[in-house]
Image (tube, rainbow, N blue to C red; front, side, top):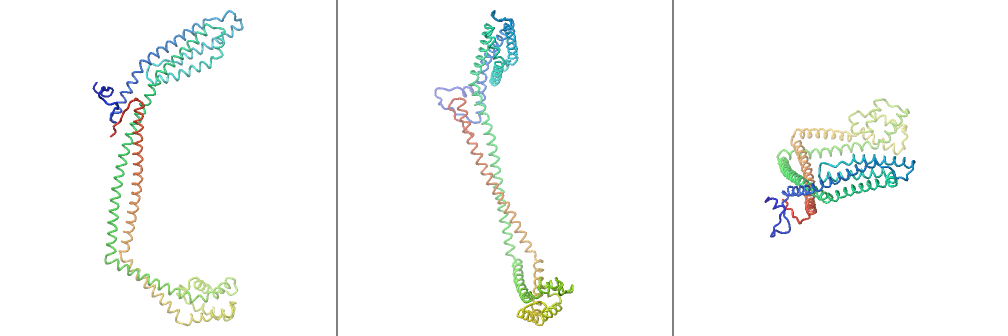
Length: 429
């Protein structure tokens, strides 16, 4: 009783505004809900009884109508029409009586469903008997007035039922909205707790990943600052120098063969056209010289030089004198001077040195370690960035949940005040 007084009672010194803890709101609303339901039940029962009486009266009307005869002025033909339309009305009254069954349950929702269904059955009856009722009005005026009046009484009784349950039904809908809001708030609070826990886990993961990255970078710095890495760097620097010297030598070799390119091209074309056919060996050497003169130096090129000199001297390649003379001069220089041989020797020397340096570098594990450590750092950084993105997304999601929670709390307060028509302040956690 003290609890109910505290919930429903209001003393003289109590403030107009009611303060209610959120955790007690469901039970408080449930009590109000049950009070509203219980208050409506006896009213619904009385109206059901009235509706039942109206239906019983229609049964009496139906039976009286079955025994009725048309007005005296009706002839034989009109009598048949009267009987036929009377049967239509009686049949539909029986259907209406079967369809409209007063419920045993006097709940508000049950009463509303009964009201909607009964109205539908009443409309169906009127649709099916509209024409027949017009005949009955003319041929059975007394019975028509009785049936029409009792149908109107039944309709009024149904309207009274709706009027009685409309307001409490609307209030129950509003109270159900409160229950939904409470459930939504509990769910949102649970989601917020989960989201905050997830954010903390992501923060912890970011911290751990950052520490791992810093440790890995520190290990990489120690490796670079160690004794072996500078030696590897020196070897790598020498490799770059030797490679550049090798490229320079190869470029010089190619430049020595450049003046021969037109003559060589003519020789190849004549071979392809069958004008001056080359031996397979000569054809192979010609192709190598034209494609890569540097690698061609590994072969004996004298037969090619001699063949080319003969072709030039015989003018069989069709070069102009100036071009022919320059090509012959360059051919003799390549064939007889030591320049090309010297360049070739330097190339082999640089090739050998490159191979030695690369072998030394391959035997040193420091570069492999550095590469492995850099890949490891890169993976850790990618994981760190990915975790940060997830953290940002989860933080935004948490903010949306918190905003949704505040909106739902506001809706709940509005639903509570609308439902109970009181100035109620909900004390949230």
